[in-house]
Length: 415
Figure 1 (tube, rainbow, N blue to C red):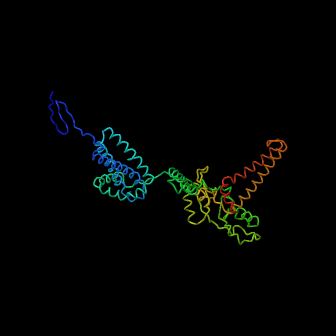
Figure 2: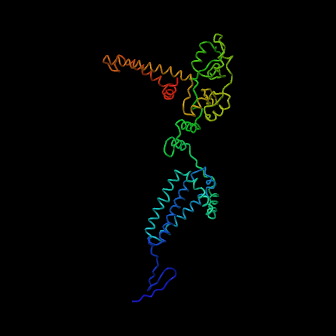
Figure 3: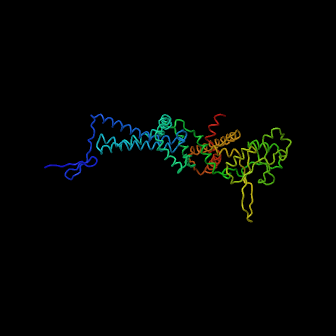
């Protein structure tokens, strides 16, 4: 039986009407070209991994000079990565079967071309980017002819700026993450720093109504009053640096009495308050004014105290305004730093309250121990009223100190 074979166009033979395609046998490891192709393949894998990692690392660094040409850098890295990945099967196919070439290429690209490089460049992006910056610039020059037109097209379609912005809630959570001390975060933020940053972010949505002191809780003096012993003793006990002065109704605040101006006064002379207070020495604000705007007013230095008014509609559909309280610079700063600011007078008052609370606790403990010695429980019919009164007194006093107990406990050690 004889065969007649003819060579067709390309690497094909036609034998008795059947077409056969010619394929080169895979190279053996004994062949020199086997190691050449294998070396080229490994180099392409490393190049693909490097391009993938640099794409992740360099584009996340806003301070890098390469980032100024964002799209040109992006296109250059992606072109180099695509060229390396697409060339890998060509060389692997020469040293193995197609099935093995596909399996090895997919595995190599996944682990050594994507996962490992991106993980390393995400963590050490600054160091790697700084070291390989000359190589990347050379690559940008080599691929400039192809990359530049594509980058200009992206500039026209998407713009030049690609900065990352966070919403306030996201930024607060991001700040919280920087409090954790890890290998990647060797210098974490202190709790005080985080509280101040979060306070500044939250204060934008706060208004005067969220922070002012109601008028009924404000220590004030009547303009027609006298600065006698009792009045000056009460001023000293309150510990304020300035006291609002009103005429007639407490809502009619006419000025401020600066406590430092009382140093040279003789309490025996009963000096009239209206002769010494400073008229109109305060700011004015509404309950709806944002706290940041009020802080700007305080920064002018005109006053550290602001009278707060609230606008309402009366029965005749007329807009009326009435004074509802005051707010000080200290109130705004406390909200900003998320902590109470205590001075010497506050510490003194706290010590008095703490002493009263301690005495109440000792008394309550003694009453319960007496009941136990008599064989009666704390709910004995002979003492429930005493126990209840002591507990209520203790509860009321604790309300004034529970919020600031940790702060004052640390400060009290210094006194």
